[in-house]
Image (cartoon, rainbow, N blue to C red; front, side):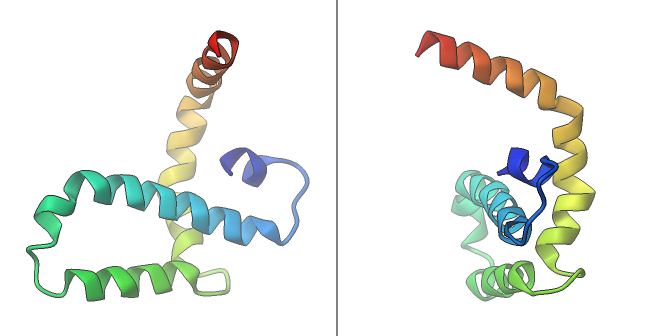
Length: 93
C-alpha cells in the first residue's frame, strides 16, 4: 500500500490506501498493547471514534494527518532497508 501511495500514478485509491496503512500500523500496535488497553474505561468507544476520524473524508482526515506526519517520514527513512529485506525474502522463497 505504501508503494502504491508513493507511486507517480495518483488516483482516488490513495485515500483508502492511506487509511489501510494507518489502520495496519494501528492494528499491529494494538496487538501488542491490547492486554493493557482493554482495562481503560471507554477504550473501545475511543477506538471507534479514532477509526471514524481516520475514515473522515477531506484533507484533514485522521489517516492523512497520521500518514503524513508519522508513517511517511519513518517509511522514507527506512524504505531501502525494507526493500532489501523483502528482496532477500523473495529470493529465498
